[in-house]
Image (cartoon, rainbow, N blue to C red; front, top):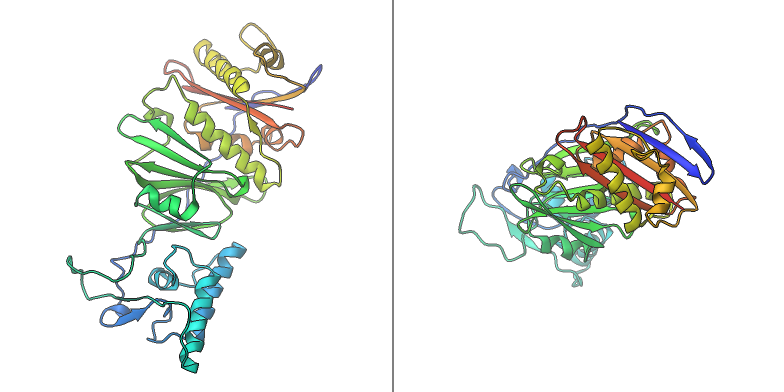
Length: 386
């Protein structure tokens, strides 16, 4: 359940509450089976030999470049299978890009001319079966990766591997769950490319990403988020180990949903980024007001923009110290994770989306509240103002 309200002070526009929400599932899984294929079973392969013919040649460079361009253009692709993608990452930086194609082509040209290339083409041996004592002379390429926006991200490995690939995050959020602690590494400097790495016990166990395409070369379970206003095109994905959850029901202290609210905020800014809009600035005062309203709705078991005593939402914001010139509000009930809640508002046909995508609003506070005895358990409020 969700509803929205827009107000330019003293000239308000109100809409009735509606039932809304959209949740889709999709994607697939592909595991590298010990990096073994029949073509690699009994001979040494060089990194870059993606066509498995035992030579570094122009065809290898062409195949790598075609795969890279498909990633950049965000079109469906299956040009290189899982082992080929390992071999295509010639410089072992966990991403297939134009540098890899250039390195292979230079190696080929240098081989033809009898000169030495400036690039080192790594070699590895893939034996028949798995030898527990086997070693390689190069750093292993992660067998599990998740590719978004043309970037290959590590899965089921240490947080250091992610920061080595992406740099230091914009912010790190920590949330205690009943059986584990989740750490969210938020990369949101460019909202339209927002990536949130999810970790537990220093291991990457998932991602939320704003993206038009992805490739899942891992065992992560997938939730697709699609834009109902644009032919259900993909706009974001949650890839998460099936042993974990971002649901409010797993949070240890449900009286404080600060991290839940911040995740909703970053997802909302990602939506704006896809439409070329500036990100909304987080406002602590608006968040406190929104949280208070959500908590009051949950405890009083009602659903409205007005406070329980009838105070208009914009007056409530002003009373709470928010410098309102123009304002808008989205409210929702029954959404149990922050990304689904953002998706419900974004896919609404009743004005919530307009609030999110308004160029006239530049600040946001988000507040969610949980109350087990209420009809919808979880209530949420987004307060925008300009």
